[in-house]
Image (cartoon, rainbow, N blue to C red; front, side, top):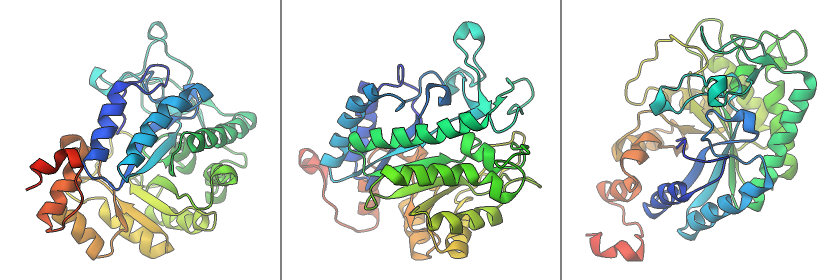
Length: 331
């Protein structure tokens, strides 16, 4: 979950405490929030960044601490596209004004996210080529910082998702129109990342499995893309939904996104992660036992309870190691 607490993309004490407490709390894997591969790719001016070498030392401090507790340190690489240059959510999340330091947003097409928001500049082929190299350079920095897993953020209406969906991508060149063309960018990014990311380290991709509207990106599209990227050494699809179009009715009930993880898993043969309104140990375990997904990703529940994995283990009757400093409280 984005913390919107960085300055110029740099890690600070908030991130150390926030992520460190989840490591202490028994997580198996911690993926840092959407971390911008370019300054213009930030959702807000307070996003974490990995667009310059100076970011590496701070990120390394986090990765090292996470790993010291036996937790896999991961990082999510992202570009917000037309949803960039916004206020923090608790400030309303609306676009920044020029006086507030707004910057020009970009997208596959010059289509604003919603009425009244800035129109992004349609990316040129040169800009697209540079973006692919930005993801590659960010991957090299992530490796230097000690991360052992990368997740590419292709969900929630951010730049990769904008290229995938015909609702936001109306290009007429090789990056728009057909399914093959709209998926070209993410495949190029995956291939560039895998040129420098070691084979033995996992690569995840996060998708919005559906736009939840007619004529948008669909679960069938997601299955088709999953089949392709499975051959590109992608290890798992993190299955979310929505975020690219406003005013969409989404059935926000417990486990509402789990069926998408199951469909993509069974339809493509790739490993999947389930997310979204999963809040109890029993729900987590049942999803795995029913083979609806291979991994459970928790976000808001881990904001509520940093020690959820330790509490879940107890609820399910499983004995797991606790930090030595906390053993007095284990019983």
